[in-house]
Image (tube, rainbow, N blue to C red; front, side, top):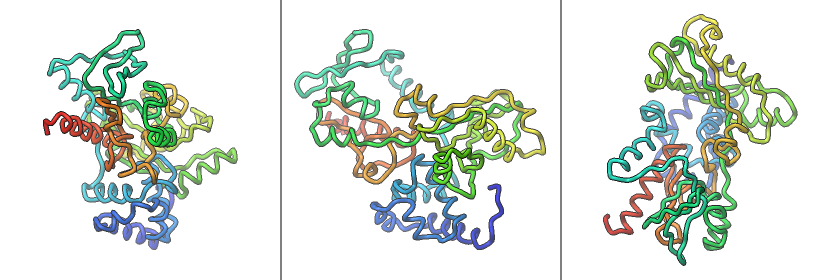
Length: 363
C-alpha cells in the first residue's frame, strides 16, 4: 500500500482476516445467495478494510464484486489464510496440460496440434467424431470438448442440438473481465516476495468510473506474482521475471505506454534494494484486453466463466451433455465445483473423467 493506514482501520482489517480464517463451514454454505459486496458491508465499516478485501475479490474473480458470489470468496479466502497463501504448480499453469499430454502419449494416443475442430459430428443424438479445419474427419467413441460453451453451442454444434433451456442458459453465460498484463524481465533478482496483492485507497470499480469520465488512473490495486521466485525455471539463472495483472474492461482503449510506466512504478515499490529499477530491466512485454481477445476470444476474458451468482456451484452446467458420448470440461463446466481459474479447469477435468468412467461402469 502506498498510503498510511490509521490503527482503527488496521484493527478492522485484522478482525475480518481472523473471521475469514475461522469461518464456520455451515455459515459459508448460508452465503450461497449473497454477493461479496454484501458480505463485506456486513462485516466491516472501515473503507480501507473494505477496499483491501474488495481488491482481493477483484484479483481472484476479475469481475465486479457487486455480482461475485460470497460463498466461493469466503471459502477460498479461508483456504488461503489456513494454507498461508496461494501458489502455482511448478512450471506454471501450463504444467497441467503438459502432464496430461505426456500421459496421453505414453498410453499410445496421438496429440494433433494446430488442428482446429470445425464441427462435432452427430448421428442422431450421439456424438461420433469431429471434422477438422482441413476437412479430415476423426471418428471417436467419446468426445470431450474444452472450448467455452458458447463456441460449442452454435459453432461446433448447431443451436438446436441442445434442449432449449440449456441452449438459453449457455447464451446468457457471462465471462470475466479482461486484464492488463505486464511481464517484466530483470537483469538480476531485486524482489524477495513470491506474491503481492497491491492495495489502493480506491477500488477497481472506482477506477472504472474514473475511466468512464475520461480520467487516467495511475494508482490501482492488482495481483503481482514474481513468477521466477515461485519456479526458478521460469527465468534464466541470475535473472528475475515479474508478472503484473490489473482488472481491465474490453470497452476501454488503454494506452500501452501509460500502463508500462504504471507497471514499472509497481516493481520499483517492491525492489528490496535502493536501486533505479529501470537500470535493471532487460525487456517488458505488455498485453492489453484487445491483445488477449485476439489470442483467446471471449473479449479477452482472463478467468473464463465469471464467478457470479447464478453461475457458480450448483448453477454450473454439468460436464455430461444431453448428447450421448459428448462431454465438456473446463473452467465453465462441472456442477458443484469451485476454485480459481486453472484450478477450476483442472477440477472440471477430474470431475469429467469420473463421469465417463462411471458411464463405462469402470467406477
